[in-house]
Image (tube, rainbow, N blue to C red; front, side):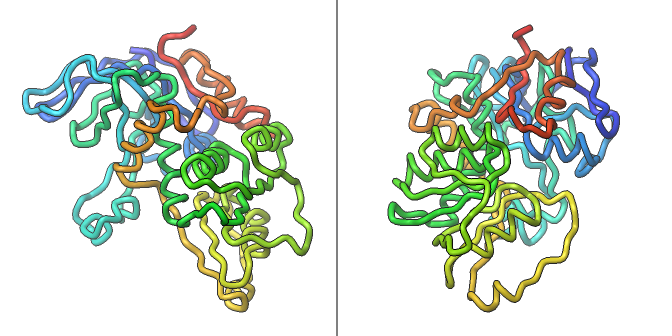
Length: 331
């Protein structure tokens, strides 16, 4: 089968590898589309997270069930599916208390086992999320990142009157903008960023945009979705006293951060790591119902054979791409 395989920093190769086999509690899926996530870029650029080399990358996807193990009862051949891609231990205190996203040994498919940049994928039935029959598979591939945005909005308890700042107009920042407006009725949202292409997209989606904030700009809620010291500084500096900062990014570089402003302003800072399975289920239904038109941030679809070109486009300094999918069929 066709696959995109990681061999080291900036070394991803299109290859033919054996089609996987499945067990009694597993499902064989024909992958339709796979999304490229920011965490995939962390692997590509810095070799973060990855545990096996070579490895088939990717954890965002949509597909169709082809075969099921004899113990599988919840899905059948022909069903459209995505999945919760987290690989957890199920035993640590995080897993036992409902915080599987904070598992002590948390990994993802594409890091600790075969990922989604391939024609076929095998997953346990328990991880699958069945989508409505009318769901567009191209859009369903964006359910997992939308689930991240749903988790952010839920944790932030957004309200129509909330004044919100999002630092970073990447896919997660833009999906958070869309979810806040469509599901919570938030109108006053500002997006701070560097890429004019992505800021233009945020403006198209109904946000105020800027490359720099005035010193007196102040928000009830700030969402850090850029993953750098400058963005985090803006999120902390521009939240009101007693306000709330939500951090969703993974930071590649270490840095020193002065916490005195956090103490002085009595700010609450909350980490927003991934989601729960129910968020992916909600995302799949929202996409099927067209409550959020996720295609508005989809800039490119590359055939799997052009995996290297797709990753290179996302790593460009001008950030003219937003969300990119790999297709297992289009060429």
